[in-house]
Amino acid sequence: MTALVTAVGVLAFMGIGQYVQVRMADAEPRNLLLGALISYAIRVSVPTVMLIALEANPARFSFDRPSVAITTIVVVLGWLAAEILAFSRLRIPVFDEPDESSQHGR
Image (cartoon, rainbow, N blue to C red; front, top):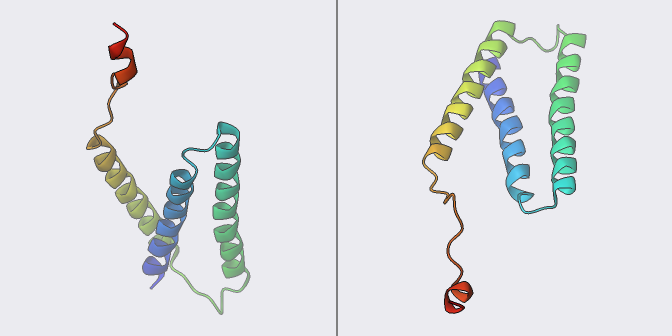
């Protein structure tokens, strides 16, 4: 059960970050930075508060620490592998397409 909760938490952390990046991709750089920093602060503070609560009351909430660590590493590596695979298959031109109006001027 601990591994499942950890995997869902890690996927939520990574997914929310990806969602914010996609939603703000066309924003001005200053707004993009602000959105990314706020998103990161929220995504770090919520699990931190949850872990502090778990440690404060170990009799009520028990979790397997090695399971948390191993699951986190495996899920993050899987997410990164999927991102690398997806981005390696993207076809993004490295040059601008010719502008039709510039062709007529010659």
